[in-house]
Image (cartoon, rainbow, N blue to C red; front, side):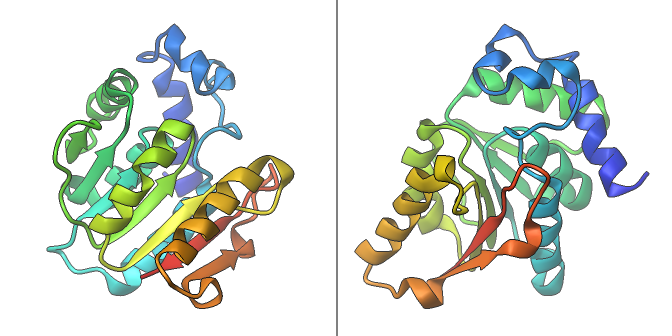
Length: 197
């Protein structure tokens, strides 16, 4: 099965486990097709490229926001994936979908528990609840973070501004710490940003 086929499979399988609350996150998820509210395959493949270049078997990877990223990262890295999400109910639906399809358990954490340190993080903002958890994820990440939805589209402007303000508040130069990854452009006009620590 190709990476695209595996990615697309998540959306059809998730129909069996998601309830009406999924409409709060992505109403097209009910249609069983990839959509603009989910982590892009282009972004996930770029993240995989980084991780594979530097990967050590002892490292853990943070998946910031349950969904298609939880599925794909477990497909690639198994039990080394740590998923965090501010909505435990939604996260449990994704977890059940992954387990029912034979993917490794990995680790799953809600907002009110201690998260482990990780090597690299794939952070899909998704909701403003996830934005509130971003500093925590940053502090627990050793190397790089892939930031989804921080491109220069008007609708992404608040998230992009948040990232730049966050890095500047730490006293870092945004030109050396933040890198636009326009090669991850997807059909919805999204592309990612790399945050280097």
